[in-house]
Length: 334
Ligand code: TXA
Ligand code: MG
Image 1 (tube, helix red, strand yellow):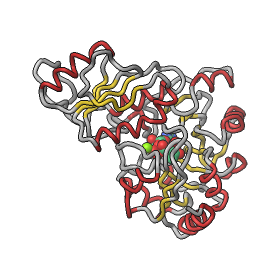
Image 2: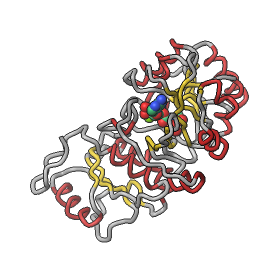
Image 3: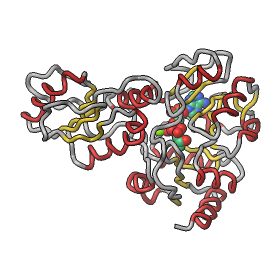
């Protein structure tokens, strides 16, 4: 792989209005020129995403913040200074010339400087903002390596910039600092504890704001397998009944369950929440590749990045499919 050559190709592709999948420390993004309405429309088409669901604009340096946002508070500048480059997206009031295609018509815009050398080289070389959602189909599992992108979006992307696996593995934290009530819209790579310790103020989680954000989605980050969130002491009973009904079952949990049937595929077992975040989407993809019917999930403790892992797993368990019918198990799903 010739990174310098690839960045050149990626830059030209973006300048010509094409789409480039690129690595970040969180997940791979599906990028297009954030000033080009046709390129941005193409992102929505390829992703299959509703147009009122806005995109994050990725920039090379926090100096560029005021090219995209206005009324930037001291708090917002402090967060940018402390956490950029990094897995933090700031929602700010947009400048008048930011196109509606990016913001879904909202008066705010999401901005982020990623902490990944290939991404930063691309953004520097391109010289302006790159609009990018995660490079997966809408509602599905986010890609954490270039092969995930190729499998999901294949030839619908003009160029896949391969920067190896993502170091964090779960999306950025989205913080709304567009007014005087800062709030977390999506937990992620920068934890609430970090935000609160640094600023000395509260960062409540706000779901269901004016703009469509992941918190409003009934189901997101979901594999084909039915995701069933259960308490650790329910796993054996549920797994036994599911196996008896002929279902293929997997497990994601902080700890293995003593004397659980060996037929249950251990997809991801780790007490370390960083490891859980890092390996979560690969585990959900493995569930599908292995043709599992159900993925039993025991949530991690919701501290630090564990809050983001639990958030994604709850959304993966959102009402999308019906729970396979198993005698003797309480009805699940709608
Ligand atoms: O880590 C990440 O954030 C990755 C990488 C590629 O940077 N990107 C990502 O993008 O996860 P996406 O589009 O899959 O999720 C971004 C979320 C969307 O749910 C969107 O609704 C929300 O950010 N968002 C974007 N702009 C917003 C705004 N102005 N107000 C509220 N939410 C916004
Ligand atoms: Mg996404």
